[in-house]
Image (cartoon, rainbow, N blue to C red):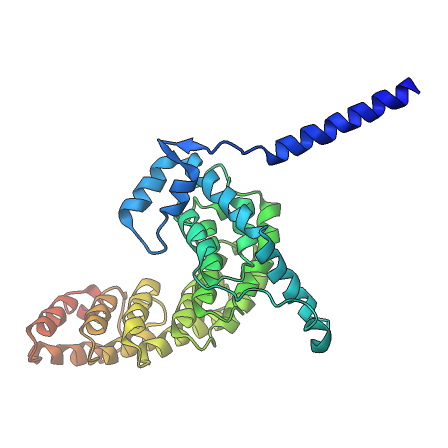
Length: 338
């Protein structure tokens, strides 16, 4: 009898202690004289160089703040129900689904996007943000997905979370980046392409996926895929397809991306019999940036096809002084003198 009484008192004490701990307000963390709530509230959804420097100076404390806030948002009742409702909609009839309360509308570029955008701009050598960045790759908010991809590829080519993380954990992320190539938002597809460059060990899966991305409706995605594909693929046929894709973007109507295609051809320096005539044709572009970039790209090729010099020499008589100067400069290149 005494044992039972002691047990009940102990159980009651545990319940009371747990209730007090749950109800008792947790003191706010203060970092550099400001509460964590203030730091988060002052986050700006757009790029701000001063704020970026401020958060970089916070180091690991800043990363932990962003991680905690994203976790709170991810497990909030609203977002949990949004995810649950979407899963239910995959197999429940619409008539049954209407019996459940509709979730809140999906917000694009909302608070979670702001958190992940800031996290994606910070160097995280300790990997403190890996768990939430992995969750955010599937976030309903496009901005959060973009920020998560930026996090994984932030840094130099040899020093990013993707290059530092355990190979087994990295391999588990590959399907998510491959799935990103099918994202309805082209910015996410474009960023996913950029992340796949860090998976050369999985070229047997990445190369076919990038080859399919050459047919993406968005020229930015086509160009990004072609650039990476040319360096990752080992067979000449795939490399040729990449060069053809870059030339297609160069000849396209979008001047905002055409100049980048000209730059890519110069960087790659491959297949001059195709690339050089395409660049020479781009010298007549109405975009001064595309034309000047095409001149610079021509200078990087080790050789030009026959007749190329004579075509470029015509620009020495161009009415625009800048064009004449560009022509004079490129004609000094070794390839032009051959």
